[in-house]
Image (cartoon, rainbow, N blue to C red):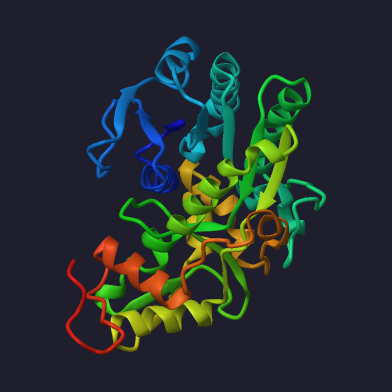
Length: 324
């Protein structure tokens, strides 16, 4: 039985990754700062480590054949923590000879992001967070090329799905559905890239199973769901069983608030993604694993809303609402 250490196991994606690898019969070690990851199967081992402490992280990942890097500091802490944490993860993976799995995002492409982005597309970040991500991924690639740590990167769009909060889906778009309001951050007609986290987690399991056939550093794209605001509104209305009033995000007010709030400045810096149509080409991933996990959009949105208890979801047959 192979062992995977899942870092940041309380996170939106990492918690799903821990569950997916457990279901695939891996021995899973969930690592968090506190040593307590909520909502995971009892059989999953839990350990504590501060990811800024290299020795502690290496000790906590002892026995791991695979390390999933789900570390994701808040925006205001990226400059301080992202690159040092990345170095510590590499040190731990090198010490154990472990495969390193990493979830990428679209920040690397900056304002040049577009529809049908392939893994080999040029990266030209136009934000501070995009530049940090490029530097981090370049560090992973250098260590792989030196023969120290194999890294498999899977890039995806905005997360939704699962009971953990903190994404655009639950903090903005669906937050007021119980009150009959759907809040969308950009033009309704533009396509936007989404990743349903249980599907994305399943794709990581599939990639881990094929790692022996891969180069020291490989990057893949997860196509997920490409949805316009119109699409997403219809899916949310279908799940809620009623029409929803449309609302927008008051970006001018948020930018004004950013004069005093560092977090709001970082959020506003990424607003271009809601005004720029984009999607990811998952052809390379499909060619490798053949069957890419994919939940139909209607079922994914309905389940996501139900798990977050954001509305009383109507079952497809019109029967009783799903249990909260």
